[in-house]
Length: 310
Image (tube, rainbow, N blue to C red; front, side, top):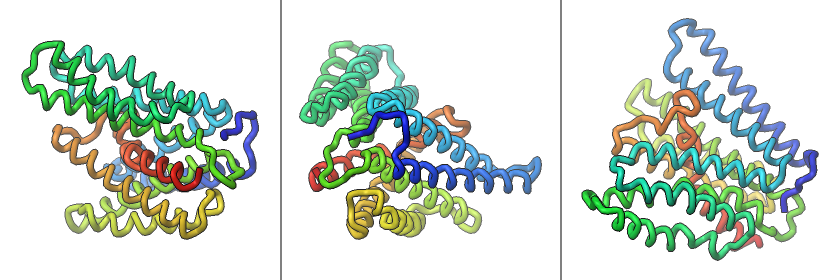
Protein backbone atom coordinates (compact mmCIF):
# COMPACT_ATOMS: atom_id res chain seq x y z
CA UNK A 1 0.00 0.00 0.00
CA UNK A 2 1.03 3.60 -0.44
CA UNK A 3 3.17 5.14 2.30
CA UNK A 4 1.61 8.39 3.49
CA UNK A 5 4.46 9.64 5.67
CA UNK A 6 6.02 12.99 4.81
CA UNK A 7 9.29 11.61 3.52
CA UNK A 8 10.49 9.91 0.37
CA UNK A 9 11.50 6.25 0.61
CA UNK A 10 14.89 5.75 -1.04
CA UNK A 11 13.56 3.98 -4.14
CA UNK A 12 10.89 6.64 -4.74
CA UNK A 13 13.50 9.36 -4.33
CA UNK A 14 15.79 7.66 -6.86
CA UNK A 15 12.97 7.37 -9.40
CA UNK A 16 11.93 11.01 -9.03
CA UNK A 17 15.56 12.12 -9.17
CA UNK A 18 16.01 10.24 -12.44
CA UNK A 19 12.85 11.80 -13.88
CA UNK A 20 13.92 15.31 -12.87
CA UNK A 21 17.38 14.76 -14.42
CA UNK A 22 15.78 13.62 -17.69
CA UNK A 23 13.46 16.64 -17.66
CA UNK A 24 16.37 18.98 -16.97
CA UNK A 25 18.24 17.60 -19.99
CA UNK A 26 15.11 17.91 -22.13
CA UNK A 27 14.65 21.52 -20.98
CA UNK A 28 18.28 22.39 -21.73
CA UNK A 29 18.01 20.85 -25.19
CA UNK A 30 14.85 22.83 -25.92
CA UNK A 31 16.35 26.11 -24.69
CA UNK A 32 19.55 25.47 -26.67
CA UNK A 33 17.70 25.05 -29.96
CA UNK A 34 15.42 27.98 -29.12
CA UNK A 35 18.42 30.29 -28.62
CA UNK A 36 20.17 28.83 -31.66
CA UNK A 37 17.21 29.68 -33.89
CA UNK A 38 16.83 33.17 -32.44
CA UNK A 39 13.62 34.97 -33.36
CA UNK A 40 12.70 32.41 -36.01
CA UNK A 41 11.91 29.53 -33.64
CA UNK A 42 10.45 26.50 -35.42
CA UNK A 43 7.11 24.99 -34.47
CA UNK A 44 8.90 21.77 -33.50
CA UNK A 45 11.00 23.56 -30.85
CA UNK A 46 7.96 25.45 -29.53
CA UNK A 47 5.99 22.22 -29.33
CA UNK A 48 8.88 20.40 -27.65
CA UNK A 49 9.23 23.12 -24.99
CA UNK A 50 5.47 23.02 -24.38
CA UNK A 51 5.62 19.26 -23.92
CA UNK A 52 8.55 19.50 -21.51
CA UNK A 53 6.76 22.19 -19.50
CA UNK A 54 3.71 19.94 -19.16
CA UNK A 55 5.91 17.03 -18.03
CA UNK A 56 7.46 19.24 -15.35
CA UNK A 57 3.99 20.14 -14.06
CA UNK A 58 2.83 16.51 -14.07
CA UNK A 59 5.94 15.27 -12.27
CA UNK A 60 5.81 17.96 -9.58
CA UNK A 61 2.11 17.26 -9.01
CA UNK A 62 2.87 13.54 -8.65
CA UNK A 63 5.59 14.29 -6.11
CA UNK A 64 3.33 16.59 -4.07
CA UNK A 65 0.43 14.15 -4.10
CA UNK A 66 2.74 11.33 -3.03
CA UNK A 67 3.56 13.31 0.09
CA UNK A 68 -0.13 13.96 0.73
CA UNK A 69 -0.96 10.27 0.39
CA UNK A 70 -3.25 7.99 -1.58
CA UNK A 71 -6.17 10.39 -1.20
CA UNK A 72 -4.11 13.14 -2.77
CA UNK A 73 -3.24 10.93 -5.73
CA UNK A 74 -6.91 10.11 -6.25
CA UNK A 75 -7.81 13.81 -6.00
CA UNK A 76 -5.18 14.60 -8.65
CA UNK A 77 -6.75 12.18 -11.11
CA UNK A 78 -10.25 13.38 -10.26
CA UNK A 79 -9.04 16.78 -11.44
CA UNK A 80 -7.36 15.22 -14.49
CA UNK A 81 -10.54 13.35 -15.43
CA UNK A 82 -12.63 16.50 -14.98
CA UNK A 83 -10.24 18.51 -17.17
CA UNK A 84 -9.98 15.88 -19.91
CA UNK A 85 -13.73 15.23 -19.94
CA UNK A 86 -14.35 18.97 -20.21
CA UNK A 87 -11.93 19.23 -23.14
CA UNK A 88 -13.52 16.27 -24.90
CA UNK A 89 -17.11 17.41 -24.34
CA UNK A 90 -16.32 20.96 -25.47
CA UNK A 91 -15.72 19.59 -28.97
CA UNK A 92 -18.78 17.32 -29.19
CA UNK A 93 -21.45 19.34 -27.30
CA UNK A 94 -23.82 20.82 -29.86
CA UNK A 95 -27.37 20.55 -28.45
CA UNK A 96 -28.96 21.93 -25.29
CA UNK A 97 -30.84 18.64 -24.92
CA UNK A 98 -27.50 16.98 -24.10
CA UNK A 99 -26.99 19.17 -21.04
CA UNK A 100 -28.58 16.80 -18.50
CA UNK A 101 -26.62 13.81 -19.82
CA UNK A 102 -23.36 15.73 -19.67
CA UNK A 103 -24.12 17.00 -16.16
CA UNK A 104 -24.68 13.39 -15.07
CA UNK A 105 -21.21 12.51 -16.37
CA UNK A 106 -19.48 15.37 -14.55
CA UNK A 107 -21.32 15.46 -11.24
CA UNK A 108 -22.51 11.90 -10.66
CA UNK A 109 -20.48 9.36 -12.62
CA UNK A 110 -17.06 10.97 -12.17
CA UNK A 111 -17.26 11.37 -8.36
CA UNK A 112 -18.84 7.91 -7.96
CA UNK A 113 -16.14 6.23 -10.04
CA UNK A 114 -13.34 7.69 -7.92
CA UNK A 115 -15.24 7.07 -4.69
CA UNK A 116 -15.32 3.37 -5.55
CA UNK A 117 -11.58 3.55 -6.23
CA UNK A 118 -11.08 5.23 -2.85
CA UNK A 119 -12.98 2.57 -0.89
CA UNK A 120 -11.52 -0.31 -2.97
CA UNK A 121 -14.93 -1.52 -4.17
CA UNK A 122 -13.47 -3.32 -7.16
CA UNK A 123 -16.66 -4.90 -8.48
CA UNK A 124 -18.42 -1.52 -8.76
CA UNK A 125 -15.33 0.34 -9.92
CA UNK A 126 -15.04 -1.97 -12.94
CA UNK A 127 -18.71 -1.99 -14.01
CA UNK A 128 -20.13 1.43 -13.08
CA UNK A 129 -19.35 3.09 -16.41
CA UNK A 130 -19.04 0.16 -18.88
CA UNK A 131 -22.37 -1.35 -17.73
CA UNK A 132 -24.61 0.99 -15.73
CA UNK A 133 -23.57 4.30 -17.30
CA UNK A 134 -23.50 2.76 -20.77
CA UNK A 135 -27.19 1.86 -20.39
CA UNK A 136 -28.29 4.87 -18.34
CA UNK A 137 -26.84 7.65 -20.52
CA UNK A 138 -28.92 6.87 -23.64
CA UNK A 139 -32.04 6.55 -21.45
CA UNK A 140 -31.46 10.03 -20.00
CA UNK A 141 -30.58 11.34 -23.47
CA UNK A 142 -33.83 9.93 -24.90
CA UNK A 143 -35.97 11.38 -22.10
CA UNK A 144 -34.55 14.85 -22.76
CA UNK A 145 -36.18 14.97 -26.20
CA UNK A 146 -34.65 16.34 -29.42
CA UNK A 147 -33.52 12.98 -30.76
CA UNK A 148 -31.90 14.28 -33.93
CA UNK A 149 -28.59 12.47 -34.49
CA UNK A 150 -29.37 10.48 -31.35
CA UNK A 151 -26.86 7.68 -31.92
CA UNK A 152 -24.03 10.02 -32.87
CA UNK A 153 -24.52 12.34 -29.90
CA UNK A 154 -24.98 9.54 -27.37
CA UNK A 155 -21.99 7.54 -28.59
CA UNK A 156 -19.70 10.57 -28.37
CA UNK A 157 -20.67 11.22 -24.75
CA UNK A 158 -20.29 7.53 -23.86
CA UNK A 159 -16.89 7.41 -25.51
CA UNK A 160 -15.75 10.57 -23.71
CA UNK A 161 -16.70 9.39 -20.22
CA UNK A 162 -15.24 5.94 -20.87
CA UNK A 163 -11.84 7.28 -21.91
CA UNK A 164 -11.46 10.27 -19.59
CA UNK A 165 -13.08 8.90 -16.42
CA UNK A 166 -13.13 5.11 -16.49
CA UNK A 167 -9.75 4.54 -18.13
CA UNK A 168 -7.89 7.27 -16.22
CA UNK A 169 -9.26 6.06 -12.88
CA UNK A 170 -7.16 2.91 -13.26
CA UNK A 171 -4.00 4.95 -12.62
CA UNK A 172 -4.67 5.72 -8.91
CA UNK A 173 -6.36 2.31 -8.60
CA UNK A 174 -2.86 0.81 -8.90
CA UNK A 175 -2.13 2.17 -5.44
CA UNK A 176 -4.79 -0.11 -3.93
CA UNK A 177 -3.30 -3.38 -5.15
CA UNK A 178 -1.69 -5.72 -2.63
CA UNK A 179 1.22 -7.03 -4.69
CA UNK A 180 2.87 -10.23 -3.51
CA UNK A 181 6.52 -9.97 -2.39
CA UNK A 182 6.76 -6.29 -3.29
CA UNK A 183 7.98 -4.08 -0.46
CA UNK A 184 8.12 -0.75 -2.31
CA UNK A 185 5.22 1.75 -2.36
CA UNK A 186 2.90 1.12 -5.29
CA UNK A 187 3.57 4.62 -6.57
CA UNK A 188 6.87 3.22 -7.89
CA UNK A 189 4.88 0.87 -10.13
CA UNK A 190 2.69 3.80 -11.15
CA UNK A 191 5.80 5.80 -12.04
CA UNK A 192 7.14 2.83 -14.01
CA UNK A 193 4.01 2.85 -16.14
CA UNK A 194 4.10 6.63 -16.61
CA UNK A 195 7.78 6.67 -17.56
CA UNK A 196 7.34 3.91 -20.15
CA UNK A 197 4.18 5.47 -21.64
CA UNK A 198 5.59 8.99 -21.83
CA UNK A 199 8.94 7.77 -23.15
CA UNK A 200 7.12 5.96 -25.94
CA UNK A 201 5.31 9.21 -26.75
CA UNK A 202 8.63 11.07 -26.87
CA UNK A 203 10.31 8.51 -29.13
CA UNK A 204 7.33 8.41 -31.51
CA UNK A 205 7.04 12.21 -31.55
CA UNK A 206 10.74 12.75 -32.28
CA UNK A 207 10.72 10.16 -35.04
CA UNK A 208 7.60 11.66 -36.65
CA UNK A 209 9.06 15.16 -36.51
CA UNK A 210 12.47 14.06 -37.81
CA UNK A 211 10.87 11.99 -40.57
CA UNK A 212 8.60 14.84 -41.65
CA UNK A 213 11.66 16.78 -42.82
CA UNK A 214 12.25 14.30 -45.64
CA UNK A 215 8.80 12.72 -46.11
CA UNK A 216 5.28 12.93 -44.64
CA UNK A 217 5.27 11.46 -41.10
CA UNK A 218 4.03 7.89 -40.94
CA UNK A 219 2.51 5.91 -38.10
CA UNK A 220 4.21 2.52 -38.47
CA UNK A 221 7.84 3.69 -38.81
CA UNK A 222 7.53 5.62 -35.55
CA UNK A 223 6.11 2.47 -33.93
CA UNK A 224 9.11 0.48 -35.13
CA UNK A 225 11.34 2.88 -33.20
CA UNK A 226 9.31 3.91 -30.16
CA UNK A 227 7.97 0.52 -29.06
CA UNK A 228 11.32 -1.37 -29.00
CA UNK A 229 13.04 1.55 -27.23
CA UNK A 230 10.26 1.76 -24.62
CA UNK A 231 10.42 -2.00 -24.13
CA UNK A 232 14.18 -1.83 -23.52
CA UNK A 233 13.66 1.03 -21.08
CA UNK A 234 11.06 -1.01 -19.19
CA UNK A 235 13.42 -4.00 -19.00
CA UNK A 236 16.18 -1.76 -17.62
CA UNK A 237 13.80 -0.56 -14.87
CA UNK A 238 12.85 -4.06 -13.69
CA UNK A 239 14.62 -3.44 -10.35
CA UNK A 240 11.97 -0.93 -9.26
CA UNK A 241 9.11 -3.34 -10.01
CA UNK A 242 7.97 -6.78 -8.81
CA UNK A 243 8.89 -8.13 -12.27
CA UNK A 244 11.87 -10.06 -13.58
CA UNK A 245 13.75 -8.40 -16.48
CA UNK A 246 11.82 -10.51 -18.99
CA UNK A 247 8.48 -9.75 -17.31
CA UNK A 248 9.34 -6.04 -17.20
CA UNK A 249 10.12 -6.15 -20.92
CA UNK A 250 6.77 -7.83 -21.64
CA UNK A 251 5.00 -5.26 -19.46
CA UNK A 252 6.83 -2.48 -21.29
CA UNK A 253 5.88 -3.94 -24.66
CA UNK A 254 2.23 -4.13 -23.61
CA UNK A 255 2.23 -0.59 -22.20
CA UNK A 256 4.03 0.79 -25.25
CA UNK A 257 1.66 -0.87 -27.70
CA UNK A 258 -1.44 0.32 -25.88
CA UNK A 259 -0.03 3.81 -25.41
CA UNK A 260 1.06 4.14 -29.04
CA UNK A 261 -2.21 2.99 -30.54
CA UNK A 262 -4.16 4.96 -27.95
CA UNK A 263 -2.39 8.09 -29.12
CA UNK A 264 -3.11 7.19 -32.74
CA UNK A 265 -6.81 6.57 -32.02
CA UNK A 266 -7.17 9.91 -30.25
CA UNK A 267 -5.38 11.65 -33.12
CA UNK A 268 -7.85 10.03 -35.52
CA UNK A 269 -10.75 11.31 -33.40
CA UNK A 270 -9.29 14.83 -33.48
CA UNK A 271 -8.97 14.66 -37.25
CA UNK A 272 -12.58 13.51 -37.55
CA UNK A 273 -13.64 16.50 -35.44
CA UNK A 274 -11.50 18.87 -37.48
CA UNK A 275 -9.22 19.91 -34.61
CA UNK A 276 -5.49 19.64 -33.99
CA UNK A 277 -5.41 19.82 -30.19
CA UNK A 278 -8.02 19.14 -27.52
CA UNK A 279 -7.47 22.44 -25.76
CA UNK A 280 -4.94 24.99 -24.54
CA UNK A 281 -4.18 24.00 -20.94
CA UNK A 282 -0.45 23.55 -21.68
CA UNK A 283 0.39 26.07 -24.39
CA UNK A 284 -0.09 24.20 -27.68
CA UNK A 285 -1.37 21.08 -25.96
CA UNK A 286 -4.05 20.18 -23.46
CA UNK A 287 -4.32 17.76 -20.57
CA UNK A 288 -5.96 15.14 -22.79
CA UNK A 289 -3.21 15.54 -25.39
CA UNK A 290 -0.68 14.65 -22.71
CA UNK A 291 -2.67 11.78 -21.19
CA UNK A 292 -4.30 10.13 -24.22
CA UNK A 293 -1.80 7.26 -24.41
CA UNK A 294 -2.07 6.73 -20.65
CA UNK A 295 -5.86 6.37 -20.99
CA UNK A 296 -5.33 3.27 -23.12
CA UNK A 297 -2.36 1.79 -21.26
CA UNK A 298 -3.55 2.15 -17.65
CA UNK A 299 -6.58 -0.21 -17.64
CA UNK A 300 -4.69 -3.04 -19.35
CA UNK A 301 -1.65 -2.68 -17.09
CA UNK A 302 -3.85 -2.53 -13.98
CA UNK A 303 -5.75 -5.72 -14.78
CA UNK A 304 -2.63 -7.66 -15.81
CA UNK A 305 -0.87 -6.72 -12.55
CA UNK A 306 -3.98 -7.50 -10.51
CA UNK A 307 -4.47 -10.89 -12.15
CA UNK A 308 -0.88 -12.15 -12.06
CA UNK A 309 0.77 -10.37 -9.11
CA UNK A 310 -1.89 -10.04 -6.40
